[in-house]
Length: 159
Image 1 (spheres, rainbow, N blue to C red):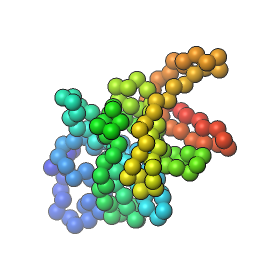
Image 2: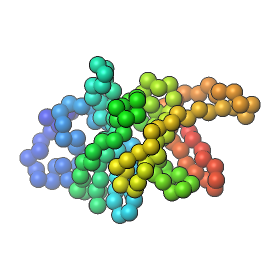
Image 3: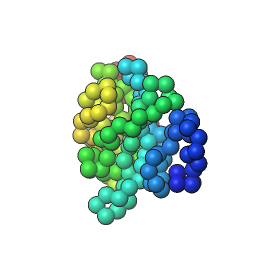
């Protein structure tokens, strides 16, 4: 169902069920969720045209209580990253910075982007994850729906 079909007659509809305000844009999976400085941040996938093809961005919304949402300017989009964005997750770096790991559409790699601030309003350019075997050879793995977490001083990623 696209939200042109959804009933918006109730004043509570958009407050209790987060719905993309545009037409049929195939809003998708929630990704890169954070609770930072008293604010809930959520990104979700949005399909849209880019360079004559379908592509995908992470739309950024914030909430003080997970009931009332505010759309923020979308920074994580192909015009910035150079590729579309498929599913992934958010994590904190060793330095405590918010970061997102995701599959870079048409990049052949998972990617990591690190936020420049806790408002998630500015990001470093993403860089590809290039896994290697213990012998230093490029690992042959599938690159989909990655997750990353930190234990001690070691990052672990699942894809």
